[in-house]
Amino acid sequence: MRQIVKYLRNKIIERNIIFLSYILIFIGIFLLFSASKGVIIREGFFIKQILWILLASIFVRFFRNSDFRNLEKLTYLFYVIILIFLTIVLIKGEGKTSRWIGFGWFYFQPSEFAKLVVILTLSSYLSKRDIRRFPVLFTSFLIVGIPFFLVLEQPNLGTAFIFILIFLGISYIAGITRKQLIGLFLVAIFSSPLIWNMMKDYQKERILTFINPMKDPLGRGYNLLQSKITIGSGGFFGKGFMKGTQTKLAFLPEYHTDFIFCVLAEEFGFLGVLIFILIYYYFLNKIFEIIYLTKDTFGKLVATGIFVMFASHFLINLGMTLGIFPIVGIPLPFISYGGSSLIVSVFSVIVLSSIEKYTI
Image 1 (spheres, rainbow, N blue to C red):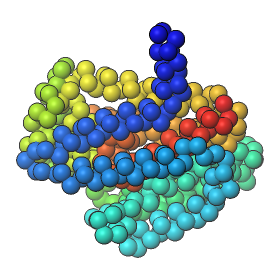
Image 2 (image 1 turned 90 degrees about the vertical axis):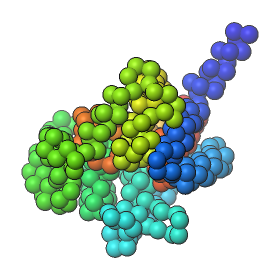
Image 3 (image 1 turned 180 degrees about the horizontal axis):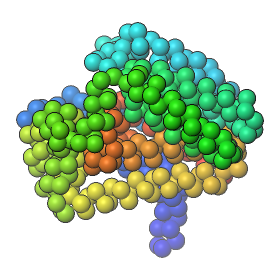
């Protein structure tokens, strides 16, 4: 019996990152169901999320046994296509900020897909070249820089910042030197005034509000203050499933997207948060294990980029709800409502599973 349990543990949990991702998806849909029931009934987004999960499951069914190395042949094609979509967003984007392309009830967010495409493209390029050579480093910088500025112009500061972290993570594994890192750091410092000027007024206000949220507690600082109140109100054990008052009475805006973590903290308390963080840690640790064990250069770089993407989303999302980082509109992967984010997250996990299957 003990051997059977050990076998299942190895095969189902330790060796299957897709299984871990579905644990997180289950937690997410559990929280979204609670978030949909309140003063403002939002059952529509819950049903849509169920549909996205079903679609993602179809992708898992058809692509989980595919060899990720086949993607390397298509990376530059994907890159050109995503640049076209990012450009279209700036021209015909939907919403207060131009981040979506609308097709009836379906809204497609190219910036979410751009992260995975940049990971694949940069990994493919650097897997065959020496980043210590300046032309290679400069080209790598362009591969990330073009979508970075297109996303920043939407404006979407949070996602644009993720591109920088992805570039640094993949470049580090690819062998970037300390001098090159110092040079890039200096470039970032000297270009920061340009980026600041490209930011919209509300983005600048978010950063200033982060420094002093009490400056405008009923305006710009409202979300941050309510987020802290919601998290703190959960106590150690929480108020119970579907019994959160801050979210149910709609004191906290966007609690089904960027602030979904607050629903968890209020209803399940510190204990629930601790369990959730441990599950996410195990998920990220599994990706790190894949990075360490794979001998395929392309696979190692891709896994590194995906690790940075998930880890940065997780840390920034929790950080902004706790007031550690400015509110920049970063979703919590697998948990927050959003079809584009969910599909990209699941595709990323499929790629990781393929890397584990074919190169370890």
